[in-house]
Length: 117
Length: 110
Image (cartoon, rainbow over all chains, first blue to last red; front, side):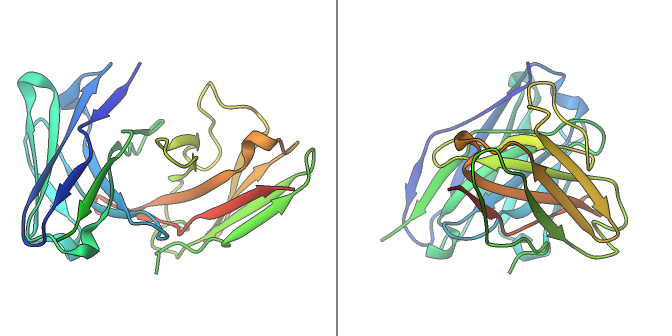
């Protein structure tokens, strides 16, 4: 079955960067885009952007342009989200997801990123 | 403020039916039959309940159903059960590779 398994929780200081991984299994990794969504406590989910694993091209929400990078390692079927210049506003649970336009969507279990001095 | 509007909370007694609305615009909900819903229990990953407005993953009970009219999508839970108590979120395709989400609805089983 399709699974997206994310890396563990992170604690970072303001100004630092964080890199979250998302390992895909149960399907052909290069066939479907990977999206990243984050959710801060008490707020709704926020779409951050997408990455096409085959070509490596990306599309970011305007709010995150210049501060996030979505990459992948095809050989191990893993997508990455890197967020730089972290502030306390970036404290959230970060999810990778296959938000397919045809068929069911699949989500990772989430990675808590805490930004604190 | 989320792009899609959901009621903050909905409640019902066991066995009753409840409906959660998700209102967007003609650029997202109204323009695409790509509205989905997920259930979220604290500490767990999202569980997709409905996709493409009304389709259900094979493992999801038929007590859950989805619909759409104009710019508003809806999730109905019939025969409400205690385990249905959770947060529910809608999301829709917004065009040009973008996705928009609702702010979430807390469902309470009285």
